[in-house]
Image (cartoon, rainbow, N blue to C red):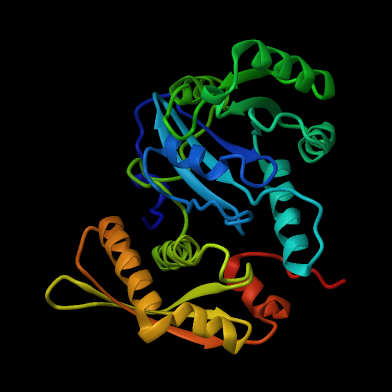
Length: 310
């Protein structure tokens, strides 16, 4: 997944390339959609709000166009420093994109959160489109009403109705985007699906397994870092990761009785990382208490976030 020189990129004639930011309230399905558009898992998905913390870029090819999808953290009213950093990153991704897609949970409709995001899109100069997700759960007349309601708040260049989970409607979104990104050379090799370093992707996979395993038991503020990655002579990889929590009571939750929770998390993460890198993986997980890590500028740099000073 490493970048190569421009000479190594495909050159088959006129090309198009553009950044597409997917924005919206928490838990509307942005990460699921990005994975569906790319055709591979490049960002983690859990039922926990604010799973995505940084800007994750997934890369896909459609015809002569390279589409770089920016999966942003959900936008909401921030209360903590980490919240503020994530929301700032989401809007930064929107302002830097060629096309911004506002994603709305059709079942939830235009709540106050989504309406506020739509109104603020007036400050974004990029082409704006509307994507209604989970349309399989809503009657068609209600969807048409939701489309009119959203376009009354902010006029969109196009509206799409999809089910990111099943993939219905995703191909139409991809074709439209390919036809509307600007001309220009591709930024990445044809076979690259993400710009995230493999160490970061592996850490994100482990964080996903923690959330899925522990559900509401573990507070929102936990993080994972990949400390070591060694390619072994037999073709396998030895990976060491540290899970950071804020209190000793949280460390005990991650470990579980008799170490059962951490073993299960490690087994699931190891399998998925092995599928990602297409080789056997030996994964070693450590759990450490790092008090107030969410107020540590170094942790923000690790996640690619700007540290809010105020």
